[in-house]
Image (cartoon, rainbow, N blue to C red; front, side):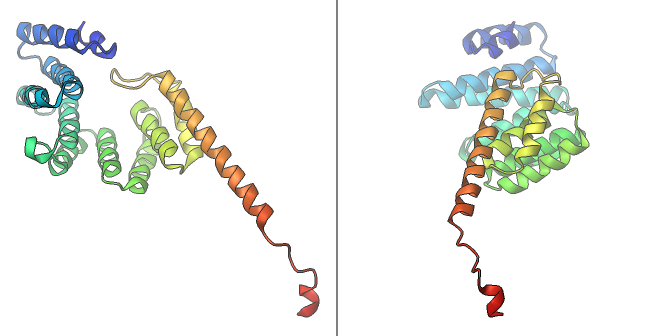
Length: 222
């Protein structure tokens, strides 16, 4: 029920249900991860003065999950996301996020590539992020998350649009993960890619129209 409430955007209900789940099964790492995710969503939506409290609860949940299961990839990934969105003064920062990306990559190379691409994008290294995902998606064509991220990065950057469109089409035939964006977001990204392609085609046509005609006497001058 807690996960369903989280997917529906009812974060107060999600916290209530997931806190109950943790109380009933305190050694279930999955429950701690999802409770941390619910706390993270709450932190993103409450007034600034309340954010530190929810952030502390979120961080404690992820750390508890990893104390129970050190190889829990979802816990490492959630912790990476926490660190990359929270300033160092509040216990986050990109240095900590990169360390978690390394932990993820050692346990799951595909998820590690996804983590690295997200961090590269956040650092403004979009071309590197896109190349990481291009390589990872080519090696894991059935991975929904990699294909979706490839499509999103291509749409955002206006590069590798054909590969991005193909990746999004593959997503429509793949089973999304529990935390993945669904068909509506895929269609939005495909539309964005189509619009970028149209804009690029218009720019090429305009450039061709403005090019000066070749000098008809040039060959004779030579």
